[in-house]
Image (cartoon, rainbow, N blue to C red):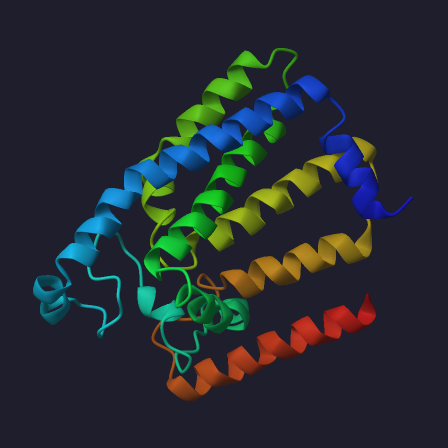
Amino acid sequence: MWIGMRFFSYLFHDRKDNVRAFLLFACFFVFYLSMNVPFLTYMNQNIAVLAPISPFYGVPFTLNLFNFDPTLYYSSNNPTVIHPFINLISFPLAYLSEFFKENFFFAVVQSIMNALGVVMVYYYLRKGWNSFYTPLLFAVFFGTASYQIFTAMIPDSYPYAQFVILLSVLYTQYSRAEKKLAVWPNASFALVNFGVTSKRFIPEGSSTRLRSRFASIGKLCICSLSVLY
């Protein structure tokens, strides 16, 4: 059986947990949208006032609500050295957002990702508890954090990095439970984790030339990995 299928069988073997996980996902997806739509509506209705004082170089997201950089998704010529793999999806996402009311598009995509993050926290904790109550409460606590709420709408790398990290933690838990260490899946997760957020390894003040080089390296790694698979 393919490694991925064994992992999914390990993760989704309990139907009752799957129902709870689905309810968590649905509730938090709606919660994130309902919390963030007022901010997005406010920006759209007051663009004439907010745009001239926006700190983000004219991009549609005009409120500075968190430590973020929405220009990552609204410029095709803005490679990042600290998130090299994000370069591969930033332009397609920015292009698609033009057809779906821009910031509302990101709010939907990232609300889905953050809601999936809540589900992954539940599954991770559930594997270590006989009862579902404590994992469920901790997952709800995690999901209602302000970080989860804001990053569900802010066009930046936070939700994508968090999604990859949580998925990697789940796979590591599976590897420990099965007492197997498959080389390619773990190596792939290591590569993607570094590629999504290499902030702790590469200085933020890197030059534009260095940024471009790391963007190219990220693309090369992705292509090489796809060939190997």
